Image 1: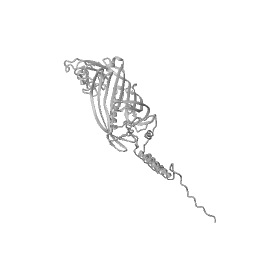
Image 2 (image 1 turned 30 degrees about the vertical axis):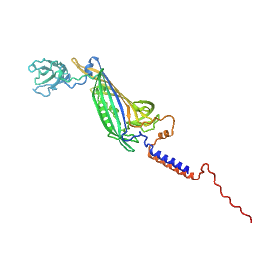
Image 3 (image 1 turned 60 degrees about the vertical axis):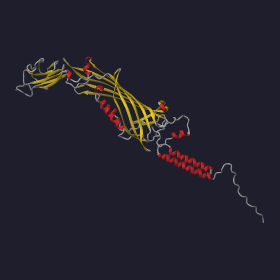
Image 4 (image 1 turned 90 degrees about the vertical axis):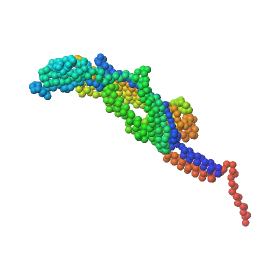
Length: 491
């Protein structure tokens, strides 16, 4: 009877253990579970631009201006006779040419006749006069140092007229040169709490508060942006995949805009590269949460995080603030290196081209608590370097000058998260000594089918042992003696 009761108790305990064992080995979440992280970040940008010949570096490397150009080209056309007044085949093109103060106008005679460009002294009162004889195939260059409206005509064919408008240099928007380097610092906090929970799904409310400080020059810093907000994030507890249109959609929308901006940053790369843009954009694979991993892990285990696979590459002991204390963690890492080389021919000059190279390095590191799989820290480092060489032309008083422009840019981003507080219970990390509970907690209770199978086997063993116990002898009891038959008297 004792053995039967004992085996029944063991069976009940086994079934109870199977019932309470975690199905997905995720952290012990409940409604209201929360975790908060301190966020720090730094973005550094440096760039340089040089030209050959070096004397033209200010013009070649200056940002594009939205004002009038410093060089205007006017073409002279004719039909070889210009015999009738107002002949449309004989003209200045364009008839109206804007140029900024100090800029130059170049007339080029593409006709077969000789043309004499002359300013209209009657109309241009108080303005300098200019004139020049231009043979077929020749050109005339005039610099305009005084703002005003200059009217001119062809001395030989007076119906051929044109106008030059010279705007004051101060009226054009002044675009300051980009700084050679600047730094952006990020600071704040990021956290989540469980607002919905079932056996298969967890809904998190993720909140953040971030400030952004800019340091354009050494010793100068200001904080133009402070930003806070929250969004809901739904996570499949078995796969750790995030449902669409939550956090992932927000981040991908921002990444797409950022990638497009970087891909079109001609000041850095010299060209717009669709290959570069597609490298920065996220793929269409599912997103896997970074907040936790489904234990157990071991050295070399593959782990799905964000858009792809990472690997457990080591372990560490982390000293975290407050009651969290020192935790034993697995280190999970992922790295990316991508280089791009581009050469784009110049359609106007097949012998010259624009070459551009870009290199992207991305290093991601997560540390997960060995006991619960909770994220303890996350360090992200990214760098982007570009180098481009392009051919351009600088207008001068003596004529256009070919110039080689070389641009270099380096961008580095470092962002880190550190667990600061959590409402989750963080038991002591597993030790090297194997215990029964340690072995049980390390068992991968993933599908419910395995739990059911184990329960069935346990129940079968209980029945088998119970039935066998019915015929067993209790310790210390004397064996029963069979009755001795009565002797018979022989007849």
